[in-house]
Every structure is written in structure tokens, then in C-alpha cells.
Length: 106
Image (cartoon, rainbow, N blue to C red; front, top):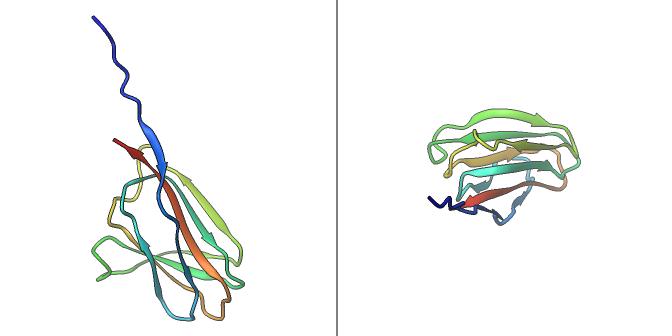
């Protein structure tokens, strides 16, 4: 009996990045379920990150990022589902907030 290994490719999704304006702005929507996720406050002030699992109707305040803070989530099994929307609010911030991720190409 032969054993076949199905190779899985981890691919990068396009970076989602938006400038902080002092109000809550949509950073982007996950097109795929991520394997590795990088959340990066590239602005000069703290920014509050919100997550929506229902298309933006309900925003969940998730984490406040200090200026320049980044967080890497390595959720090989458990991760945010595709369709998750990320929002941020960086009052008095100059700069951007970035969401970058990789996903498995099945």
C-alpha cells in the first residue's frame, strides 16, 4: 500500500493596511483563514483594534496596541475565520495599522 503525502502550501495574503484618521476605520477582511497573523500598529500613538465576525454590525474591542507595537499570532490549529473584519481607531495617531497573514492553499 502506498502512502501519499498531500503537500500543503502556505501562501501570503495581500497586506491590509490603512492610515489612522482619528476615527474607527476598516483595515480589511480576511479572505482566507490565517495560519500566521501579524497585527502591526505602525502609527505614532496607541490604536484600539476591533474585530467583527458579522460583517461590521457588531465591533468587538479586542486589544489596545501601543505606538509601534506588533503582535504575531501563530495559530496553526485555531485562528480567526475567513470573513473576519479588522477595524482600528488611532486617536491623534500619524501612521498606519497593518494586518498581514499567511494561509494554507488546499
